[in-house]
Image 1 (tube, helix red, strand yellow):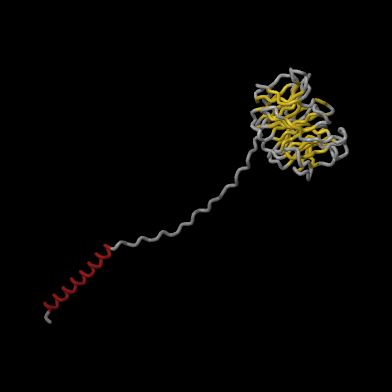
Image 2 (image 1 turned 45 degrees about the vertical axis):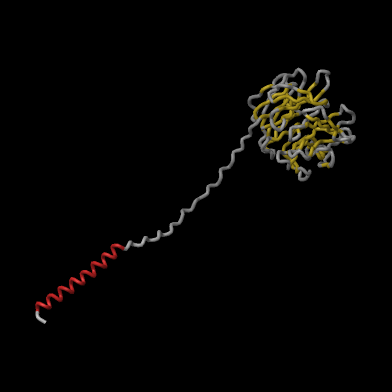
Length: 327
């Protein structure tokens, strides 16, 4: 092969090789590069903060009696305001479940004691039943339709009665020879607790019965228990009794609703009308210190701690009694 032909053969091979390379590059340029799968990314750990400790605000209103009139104040004792005058000697207020009305006892136009209901602002006072002088507890049914109270006017040593708020229908629940008083309606409306003495006041016990008066059960056995007050959840009953230390002083106790596991909460010479706060965290009561026998409204935690005075005394006062708490 001569040199000229050899040259052209080499040149043709080079051109062919360059064409193959060009076609390959062209195909590569037309084939999209695969999209790489994103590498899995771990979500950063989320720290769930501890929920803040709730701040319990003890709000609402407390009604009480002073010098023959009904007063109302904030739960901390501020803004004390008179709702009714002392012209007819009213006492022992009890809030309706919705907080719109207050029941109380008072002397009627004939000079007899009776149960009345008024609006929460003191207006529209209406008589609903006759009552016992000095009765210390009036209690509403949870549906707000009825009021239970104690009375001896109709004979006997004292019995628990129920009056309908919107009509004149009244009926007697207890029919024993005991002195029955201070009823307290359970929050579910199924039971009524009360105190009773079978021997004219020498020994007292707390009983519970169905709301129709049936199923009577004795809860306490110490001979001194009075003034039951249901906790808002219905699981506990606070009451007043003589202290177990032999001092003959009185104390506030707390027991399960079936009467079991009574525990001592606080000493006092005589506390009356125990009233739970709507949230069940506190108990208000009227404290009668025998060294200064003018009742004063106090409040304490439901475990008996942090006893705090809400009202004071002034010359001429007969004292503050019968606290009742509403939202």
